[in-house]
Image (cartoon, rainbow, N blue to C red):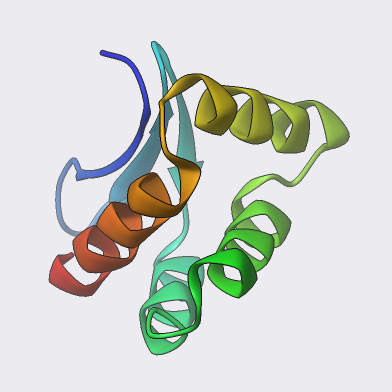
Length: 89
């Protein structure tokens, strides 16, 4: 599946949520999810910066997030969808 998305994979695990980047995924801690939820009403550009900073813990991941976002069509729409999805996790 193309694009960026969050997926809850369980409860009571070390990582309960993964962030998909195309066909790759990154485990995301509950603390990071809570921080992103708290900031999910930010404007799309600011939320993207926060997302990249928190989920992209290496320069490679940060570049992959940006690349996947550029290839997914309208970046603002994609970020808005991610903001809604993070609130529902």
